[in-house]
Image (cartoon, rainbow over all chains, first blue to last red; front, side):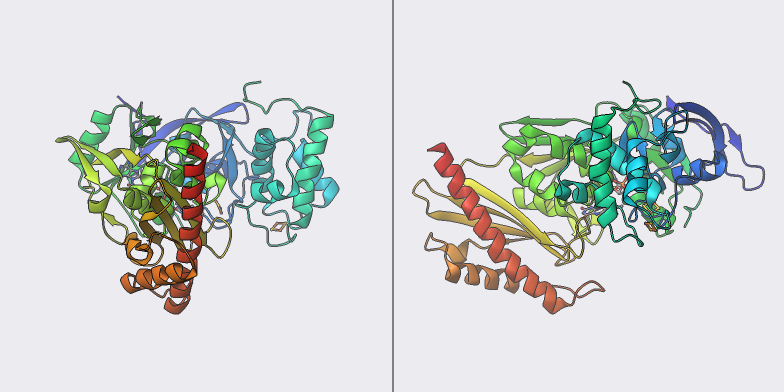
Length: 183
Length: 293
Ligand SMILES: Cc1cc2nc3c(=O)[nH]c(=O)nc-3n(C[C@H](O)[C@H](O)[C@H](O)COP(=O)(O)OP(=O)(O)OC[C@H]3O[C@@H](n4cnc5c(N)ncnc54)[C@H](O)[C@@H]3O)c2cc1C
Ligand code: FES
Ligand code: FES
């Protein structure tokens, strides 16, 4: 049996449409989309979650990075249909439900880890997962952690400081698990 | 930068996936998508259908025994890299995987996908050829094994047929008398390399070199392996034998120019890396022999 068989045809284009359930930040969304809809576009256009940014759209810049079952992946290199039923976390899911900033967000604020902010969502998701794997990174490890994300403003120094600061904050006040994540 | 329309299916059995491929000569397999999706978005490829194999069960294994490492079609680069047994049985696999893209790309991209994508600037194809590995290809007609030496025929071109799915790759184990090393030069950490070299050095119990082979990526249109043993006929490694090995390598390579590097610069990198990597593989060989003793 094939999952996600098309359910409809787009009357304008004749393209097959799929009914897909996307689990984003603990909330289930139902969307009707063509197979070619990139996950980044589904998040931004179909769900209105514009926190996920799109820079290069071919995997190089990292701005679109989201967490798929907790692991960072490029949203511009996945089709939304392929993400059906899997747990996604976007930058919108990193703050506490009451709006309090998550440790990585707090550290970016304190360390001046952003200027224009375009690259920031991808850094925040990448670092959130990176610190879970390595809660106490050295400066070199912090650089390695962000090696796949481009920033055209900051020169990276403050982002590296923010990684180390975020690790410190997380140690001081262990945070709640991400929404949708198994504790 | 949006893909052209295609029909999408996500079969949940291998047979169903193979039937979909057999039914449509223009259909393509979607694995990790880390090479295919950019090609679709740039409209360098516009297949009529994508067969997403990510829901096919029992393809994500990394299995090792004393013969070698077997990597399933859905094992992500990250999973292969994290496998301690794979690292022990064939260290060259993890040495090379560390240089494949960034961790985020490795979370999704598959090692088998990289092998069949057949990019001469990718790390894993040349490792497979150098080690004498193979892939298993399945189709509705049955299963066959393709030896690495017969797999690559041109830039982004392999002998895998359009109706076949590569279900597994096999990397033979490191023999007891061998050592390995890998290095590459890239503009930025995580980028495709301007030039990369993998080497396997073997020596007898007295430490006398018996064989030296090196694999080159990003130098020619195909992953290329050169036998450098002749330069070490005396059994020892020194500056003179390394220079002779680099000459030998360059005599069989024809470095190409592109927007990233001139042919001369690539030749220079191939020379420097040959000497560096063969020396490291020799050191590794010595350390393993002494470790065993
Ligand atoms: C920013 C960036 C940097 C990168 N840097 C590097 C690098 O430095 N070195 C490197 O080697 N790679 C690099 N890659 C590519 C990455 O390694 C890919 O994961 C890999 O090349 C393809 O694997 P995939 O699973 O993503 O395959 P896909 O993109 O899904 O498929 C690639 C091709 O192989 C076919 N295919 C895939 N799997 C199978 C199968 N099992 N059977 C039959 N056909 C199949 C597809 O039909 C397609 O034609 C990079 C990618 C990006 C986006
Ligand atoms: S937009 Fe996805 S990596 Fe640049
Ligand atoms: S803050 Fe502007 S690109 Fe990073």
